[in-house]
Image: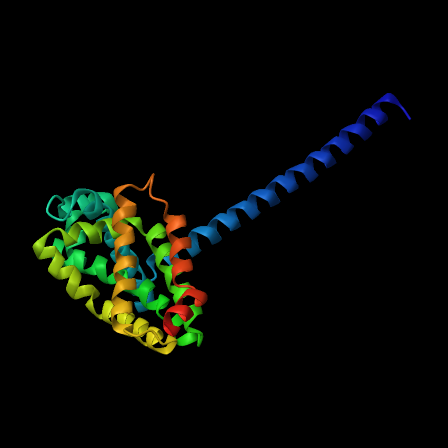
Length: 248
């Protein structure tokens, strides 16, 4: 093979390789363009597609909770009268106008915050109908209440601060009245089943103890021995102690 033939051979081979490379680049670019067109089409379709009623309701509920959660923090730290809808809207990361679309004012918002915490306590009262053993129910009631105090400090700060204000205390009493009456009546039945002489008084005494714990705990959280208090309560309301009291 002559030098020219060799040169032509490698030249043709290089041209063939360049053609293959060129075709590969074209194919990759076409795939990229197709992907981009598909992505933009789907994005624009989804963006312009009207929301369903369920989606709108979900967004409303999410925004309402966002405002309520912000109000809980603001009310708990600034107090009801020291807070404004502007403070709450800023904390929620929304405009004040949008906040007014969901709540007519601070009082309406405060009532909503208090009512939102009825649900966890209603869920806790399920234990009264789940277990037959009255001693087990009392144990779970004490543990559940202590756990609620630990997990929902902001709520308890707000609730306790409301109790020091005449107007707000009446609101708190009204909002929580039904759940309090429900729990007291169920505790009274438990103590009656155990055989204690004055089950109604016993229910109110235990209720007062459980209500007083968050006040002392939040006033001196660093030093309050909440775990030891829980342990002592469980001992005082154990099956052994309550059975002895019922016999006497």
